[in-house]
Image 1 (spheres, rainbow, N blue to C red):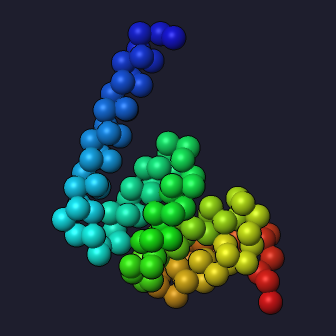
Image 2: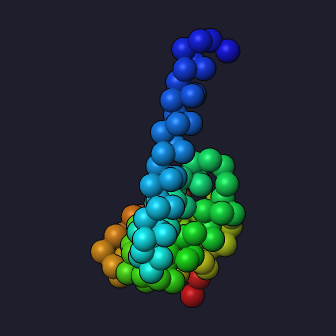
Length: 115
């Protein structure tokens, strides 16, 4: 591995750890706020920890069902897992709350909406 790559990886790891610490501190201050759970879920997804990300996203939408970004992220995760019913459910929830990104994604990939 090149020196540049090692330096870049170290910097990214430090940045990720800082972002994680910020979200955890926010959760400690405001455990009923869905936003830091969503942000932490996105970090977990980037760290290849999809199970943790999924749990955090589900908790986020349980706290705030109108958090459209979390529903879109759940749409993506469920579509990859092949759970089209759950993917469409979250896509439609996001759409209801102003973000059609999940619906667009599923339609673009020709994922059939269950009746």
